[in-house]
Length: 214
Image (tube, rainbow, N blue to C red; front, side):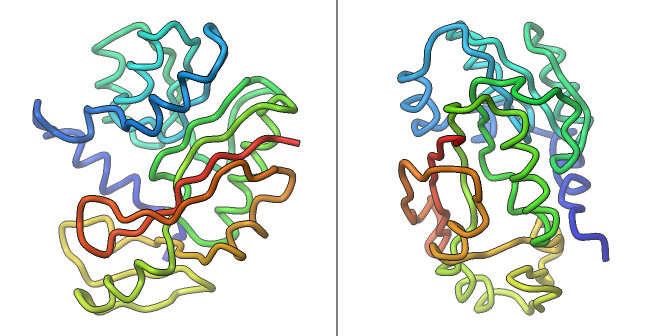
C-alpha cells in the first residue's frame, strides 16, 4: 500500500461538494491566527482542498498560494479566482527556500506514514522564512481507541493506521501521535501552542498546533 493516498478520496469528494458544506467555512482558529499576521504576508495553504482558507485569507489581503494533490479541489478554487493554485504532493513542495512568511496546513499532513510526515515537515521548514509561523493540526493518539471501536483496523507502520471504513478516508493511511512524539517530529520548529481538542464528533481528537520556524 502506498503511504499517502487520501487525496484520491478527497478528489472524489470535491466533485460533489454541497453549497452548505463545512469544507467551505474557514476555521475560527485560522481566523484568529491570521489576525496576528502582517497584511500582505505570503502564505502557503498546504492541502487547500476547495479553498475555504485560501480564499478567505486572500480576501483579508494576504498573498496566498493554494497547494493540493487533488486537482478537483484546485479546480473549485480556480473557479472562484484570485488565488494561485499548485498541484503537488506535500512532501515535494515546488518552491524555493524561504519562499513563504507563513504556512497553514489544516487536517492534512497526518495523511501518510512517518516517512511522508517527516519529509513534509522538512519541506515546510525549508520553504518558511526564519521566524515564520506554521499553523496546523495532527491526529491525537487519544482518537485511536475511538476509531478502533468503530472499525476493524491495522497498523501498517509505526503510528500509521488504516481502517475498514468504506466511503471514508479512513481506508487510507492516517498517522496518530502523542505529544512527545509530535514534538520530536517538528525538528527546527519552536512550539508556541499545542492543544489536544475534540472536534464535532465524540472522540475526534486533533492536536492544534502553532509553531515558529527557527
